[in-house]
Structure formats: C-alpha cells, structure tokens
Image (cartoon, rainbow, N blue to C red; front, side, top):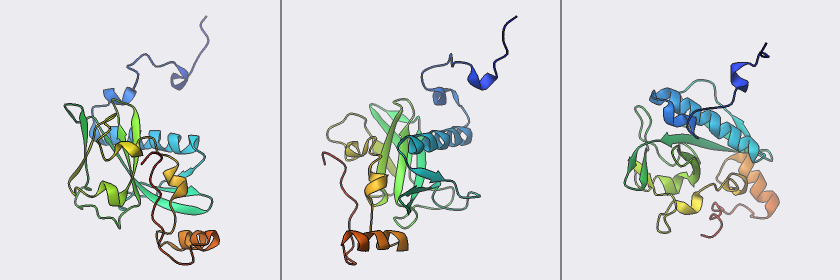
Length: 181
C-alpha cells in the first residue's frame, strides 16, 4: 500500500512557475503576495500584512526595528520583451505618499523588482519592465532586496531615529542606489 502524503507535499508537475496557471487575477495577486512574503523571509526581513485591504500598501517590511510600506504588483501582461504593471488601486491613483516601494513580480520570468516609489511613479499610469535590458530604468532594481534594508530617513519616526544614530543629524537621506547604478 502506498503511504499517505498530504497534497501540499506532492511535487509540482506543472510548469516551472505555477502562477502562470492561475487564471483569476485576484487569486494570482494573492499568490504573488505569498511569494513576496517567502522571499522577504529568505532575506532575513519580516513581512507583516495589514488587516483588511483599505491601505494603499500590501505589506509592512521590517528590518532592525524600522519599517517600510510595500505595494506588491504582479503581471503576465507582455508586449514584445517588456512587461507592464498598472500603477493604481481599484479607485485610487497612487502617489509617493502611499508606500515606500513597489515590489513588481514578473511571473513568467520569475523575477522581482524592488523599486522605490519615487522612481516607480515617474510614469503615473504604468510601469514597463524589460528584464535584462541595460537601458531599462528598472533593471538596477532587479532582485534588489538589500534596498529594503538600506532605506532610511524617509520621515517616519523610527527611520528618523535610525538616521540620528547613524549621524545624519536630521538631514533627509536619500534611498541608496542599487548596486551598479
């Protein structure tokens, strides 16, 4: 007799990225958020999901007592070699005050882009990512998980305190550029 194995322990026999098979957009977005939480944990960060869905951000990401607000987006939408993300909520157009980072997940390429809000929201309606393109403004943010550890002095009290301890003395620090930028 074959031993019982719960369904969640069975090996996937689907395509390499199971998100490609999720047809319902809301469920695919929820799946991408779970993937985001796993990647955050892999990088030693803590992700907290706010209760409800009335915030303009999806997660609070914590590192050494300081927090960042992250909006998670995912896409299958492709034109040529580029992938497109809509930059608005159901009834709200995002602003830089709504969150600190967008975590943009390109599902077919299984790649994350961690983009500061002020960079992502240059084009107010959408973000176009071309994986591997040396001329893409977003390529330096590919898999840039360390940015979630380095951002400081954005004005929230925790970050202002961290800034003071690092010697910024109240100056507004800018988020560091990703490696190579």
